[in-house]
Length: 111
Image 1 (tube, rainbow, N blue to C red):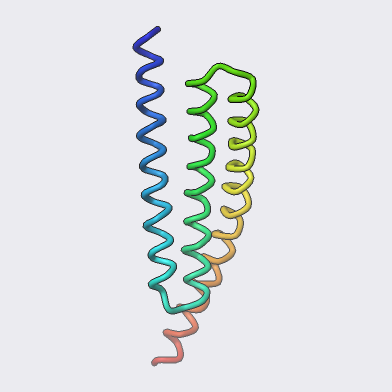
Image 2: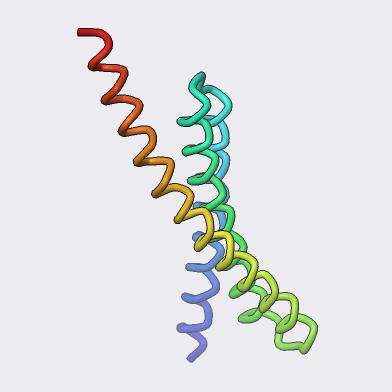
């Protein structure tokens, strides 16, 4: 049982670090992009990674600290992160289609 707890905590900490790094990567891509639609697309991906960061952080809080306050705070983080992942995944899908149409339209103008 102790091994599973240690494995779960180490997995969650690794996931926290990985999601935060990916959040920063896509924020930098958003800043470096010139096009507005592509910038909004990268921002939505970054917000998805931020939502996953909140979910994993909330789960880690609930797993490590066994108090009522930790369960409440962790639950709030999980709910907010889940909402962000859901909302910005829909936005990403919409923006991906718009980017595809703009790229197709731009290529046809260059010919």
